[in-house]
Image (tube, rainbow, N blue to C red):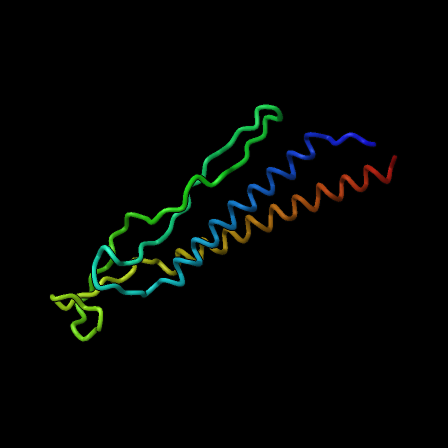
Length: 138
């Protein structure tokens, strides 16, 4: 039985981790877009955009650096207070609190994470093709 090349396994593992991180990033931005324009009756109840936090992870055996998601948490951006006394969620002052979502920024985040995900898919396809060509030449 042929032995696995640990370097090749690391390439696939690192790409998978990167793809997972990009999916978390894309899902957070999609959630933010879905909640854009949402309102609440108080500042505490208002939606705050989600932000993933990433951390570099060094594999000492191979010297390669990967990524992992350490958390996904609401940002500290304050909701937008809007005076709308006719709104059913308005507080005693007639104010509602709108989610502070930058829709353009979130779309850029989705496009960038999708592009990075696709780059990782292409890297995996290249590695697979190189492995197949190596096997055929033996």
